[in-house]
Image 1 (tube, one colour):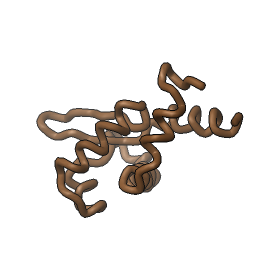
Image 2 (cartoon, helix red, strand yellow):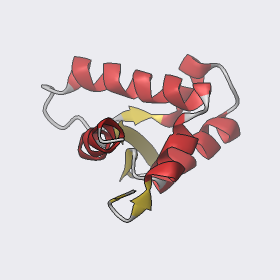
Image 3 (cartoon, helix red, strand yellow):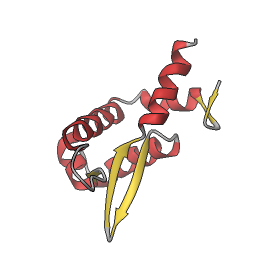
Amino acid sequence: MIVHNIHIHDVLSVLGDPVRLKILDMLKKGHEQCKDINGYVGIHVSDITKAVEISQPAVSKHLAKLRDVGLVQVERKGQRVYYRRNEDMIDQVKSAVAEL
């Protein structure tokens, strides 16, 4: 099964890591708290690092895997990088899994 040219197996494999699930949960909570703020772009990687309590390079690797399968989106503001969940992709993954 393919979602946005990405095999569902790859997405589920990425979701099999508890740190990545924690990151997605943090991004969800951040979005829910800030979605009405004008100009909200996501959560800065340093804030994610503090929340999951692992090194910044390790967080960046987890975020890269989440980004590679389309579960997170990235926005740069100057030298700062912000991450947010790709809710459209997450909804499509949920639908694909429900069809199994």
